[in-house]
Length: 242
Image (cartoon, rainbow, N blue to C red; front, side):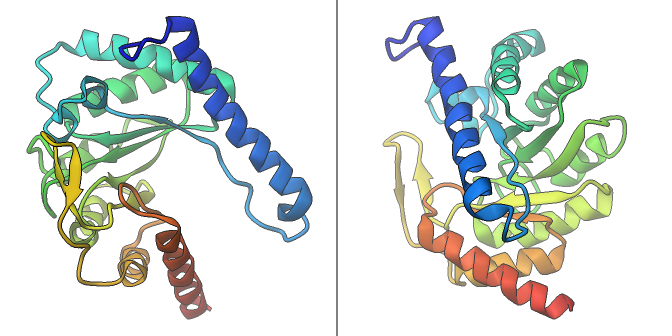
């Protein structure tokens, strides 16, 4: 609504996004997926952090200066809309703080919606606002029956393997990861700069699978070629498991 949309228009955009995906998914399934015995694609309804709404870079810090109740009010309606529109899973992504993750989980658990939580991290050890990823994993290890996956996104690819190991050491929930391609983000100028990471994205993806990730993808500044590299990594990994 900050961009001039009415509440109704903004809500319809969320509904439309889910509808478009589901229609494309169903069409693909009938034309190709079913006969090829492919896995049924889930629709993940993405709910980003409060900081992304502020558009001031605070999604990489998590220091919003608001109460849990205010956070809950912000996320609640979006979660309702995504679920009602047909999303199979609510994806709370790029979460910079444990506080926000717990608020999001509380909403989904109250409604009984299945969900994933994906943190953004500053290193192999901590999420963006400074909490150890091990503490985050321990927090969600028990008592959240609708949490189907925990993981990391919007993070440098070289940090992911270490983060996977720390999550695995502290909870048994499946792990999903989708890092950036490696550049740095300037939150003031709102541009990406620098070089991509040293290893190929294919090698990174393979390493993540070997480390125990159940789902692997790409986030900011990843494009079609990165998806192709993940596919090649999956084929390589699957061949080794036979």
